[in-house]
Length: 52
Image: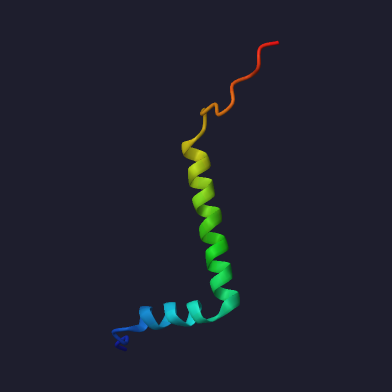
């Protein structure tokens, strides 16, 4: 069985034009990006402890 040449493009277009699916893809993507950023920033001290 031979796949159509533009099948991935048509799948992407279908997801993009479906509001629920596109929102889900964006949310999952933002979550994964946030996790990766958090892993990179382990040990980074943004605000040092205030000495009293």
